[in-house]
Amino acid sequence: MRSNILFISLLDEDDFQDEIKRKQDEFLDIYSLYQRTGLPWIKEELLTKAYQLHLLDPEFTFHV
Image 1 (cartoon, rainbow, N blue to C red):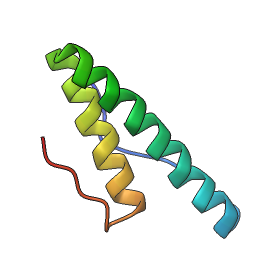
Image 2 (spheres, one colour; image 1 turned 120 degrees about the vertical axis):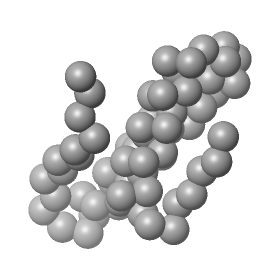
Image 3 (tube, helix red, strand yellow; image 1 turned 30 degrees about the vertical axis):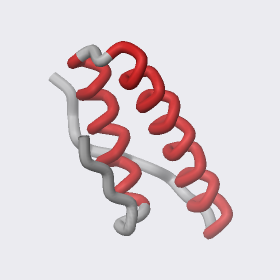
């Protein structure tokens, strides 16, 4: 069972920005993989990454 809880330990604003950048990179990697494969489990991972990114940056939105 997968959890929708995201725990992040940040020390300052630079850490926060670095974490957003990491999540963006992860999202883009999975998005690219989903575009190439169209596999349902990749789509689930993509939606999870989008949700995590939205938690860090509420202005981020994504629709499949």
